Image (cartoon, rainbow, N blue to C red; front, side, top):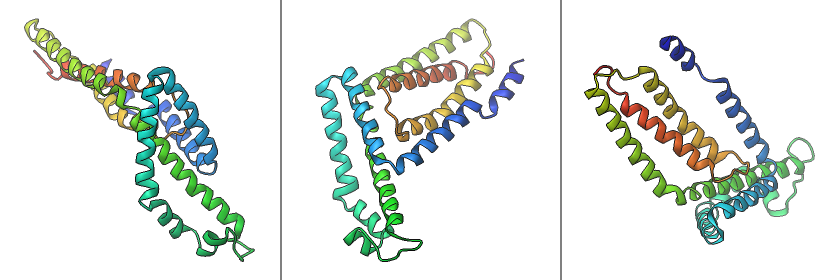
Length: 219
């Protein structure tokens, strides 16, 4: 029964495929609408204020903006990208003489896509900095999960109990999926409440505990 369940679980879950596809469609759509991404950023900052408070939120936002300015704009990265993809005539006058395929409208959309990419990058940096308030909790949860897993394994040893390959396999697969979920959390340009971070952390702790407590096949 356990082998049958593990075999079915080893296939990629449909819900995960749907989430990946939908999130990437949203990301691509956001490239042509930088303003919608900025509105999502504003909404997420409001969510952060209700959880972190004004002072912590402003500190996180300012740190993220300073890093965005330093990496994306002050470094000249944005101007280099536009110089590479946009013709010099358009960058100088915001129009081109070509009225056929690569006309002014084409380059308007191209510039909007580039702007959308950089706004998404700003949003991703903000999300990364928003993890800061949870770092201590992350350390505590990971440590507690390791200790709990080790203690449960010792109990099984002294009680002559069997470890569970099913639980070990499920926890291992959960850890495999988590990096993808973290990636989607960072790059999906939709406002998310900060509670998403401790939720993911809870799954990490559960997976670590189950793996450690079930690493031995037989005791």
